[in-house]
Structure formats: C-alpha cells, structure tokens
Image (cartoon, rainbow, N blue to C red; front, side):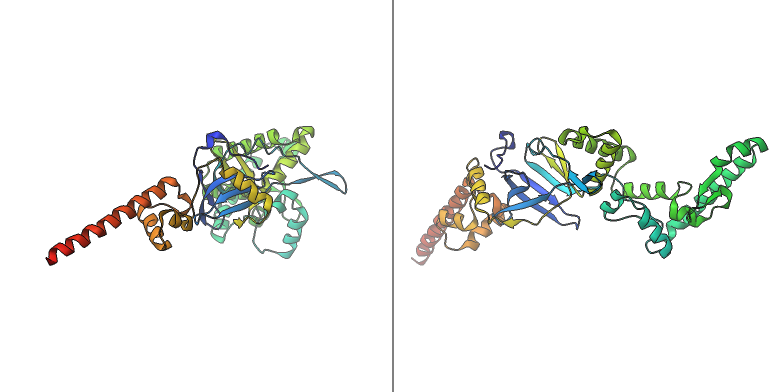
Length: 354
C-alpha cells in the first residue's frame, strides 16, 4: 500500500513548488508517496496524475579494501508530511582550484591529490583574472607582514621558530615565506588567502551568511545522524562519510510540518504506467474531494465545447488541476444565468419588433 498523506495535510490537495537548477519553476498538487518513498505522486497543472522520482543520497564507504557498502536510511520519519517546496541546495562549498585550465603539470598534481568528496561535488571554483589581482595584492601584503615579523625576532628565536615561517610551494618544496610567489597562493592557497576569498564569493552567490551556512551544515549533520546508522562508526569515519554525503546534495525538500530532507536529484514528472502506482494514487485520492479534468467538468455541466469551460476557469483564475465540486457548481450557475440572459434578450427583441 502506498504511503498516505497525514490528516494535517488538509482536505484538498496541497500545492507545492519545484525549482530546478536551470531556473525552471513548476507547481503541482501533492497526492502522496509510493511505498518506498522514492516517488512523489502529483497532479500536474493540466490535471494529469503523474510521478516524480527522487534520487536519494547514496555515499558508499569501504568496509574492506574492495567492498563498498551504503548507509541505511530511515525514510518513513522523513516523509511524514506533504512537501511545500523542492529547491536547489548545496550543503558544503565546492573545492577550490587555482585555474580553470592552468599548467598541465599542476592539473595532474590536482587530480592526483583530489579527495573523494571533491570529485563527488561535480564542480570547483577558481578565481577570475580580476580576482587573481585582488588575491595577489592581499598575498603580497600578508607576505610582507610575515617577513617583518620574522626579521623582528632575535637570531635565537629565528632558529627555533623558523618552521613557523616555512610553507610548501606549488611544486611541493618547503620554502621560506619570503621566497613564495603569487602563483603559489593561486594554486595551493599557501597563505590561506585564495580559499577564504572564494568562499566569501560562494556564500554571497548562495545568499548565505557564514553563520547561516554553519547552521545548514549542523542541521544536515543532525539529519544524517538521526536518519541513518552512522552512529555505528568511529568519529573520523563518520565525519568522512557525512562529508561524502554532503557533497552529493543538490536539492532540499521542505515539508508542511517544517521538517526538511535533502536529495541528489529528481526526475521530470512522468505519467503513471505501473499498475501498483495507478492503484495507489486511486486509493490516495479517495481521501480527498473529487478532482475533475476539463473534459469531466464539461460533461458535468452539459457543455460540449471544452474551450468554453477553459475560458471560465481562466476568467476566474482557477488552474486546471483545481476543479473541485464547488467549481462545477459555479460553472453550472454561470451557464444557467447565461442561458436565462439569452432568453430575456430574445423576449426583449420580440417586444421591440411589436
């Protein structure tokens, strides 16, 4: 049996909005879920019953060198209410890189050192030419400050604290901070200027403050802890798995009861072809007032022209997927008044001729 909507979801079908990464915005009526909670049953704006398949977050972890397993998700507690909105979302910032094309040698170095979560993120950020100039100015300023600090030390302190003023350049060599080049910062974030700059840009692009981003990460972490078996792992492994899962997030679902969950993707709405899905939707719709298609509405009111019904709905601002019994009565009343009006006009015409 398909999952039922809760009584709190209301008498009529709830409306929810879908926003895709491409910027497209779609509005549906929520019907319910399939038994696995992997498909949302909806009624489209054209009053067709359809299914939207959800793509779950499935980050694998290696229990043995060649054995990959997945976390066990507890989904029935997540989908306890109707969805309000599905919208694009990223939990963590993408990986940062020095250039889009760059030196082939550096690209090979980057690919070799790339972590699993970076690959799963699907994209990376790199500074533009104008941003490189800004980063370069900040790098030179910080480099100068570090050199002055080092030179202000006594010879003895310079010897024992020299390692604090050393850093690895883009070629993997350990150098004194004064010997570093701007390109070292651009490629490896050696003085920690490039990454904070790109992160600030990313937060602004996603309309987040640093505290809001931190709250989102905490919220997602708590969600994973409460809806998976991740507590069975040691802390370092659990942190690595959470980061892997977070890198897969592409969309956030918000529900009527204020709960939320995250998915990696969802499909286009498709007509229901599986007999089990058709039966499930039929059962779910029994709990709601009957919804009529435009054709069914025309039959109910005794109108042969579907466009006549459509024009009334457009005039009143009623979507095709919201034709309930009260709308049928309203159309009938409109047609009755219209018919009576024609009869009166005909009588007046006859009187005018006499």
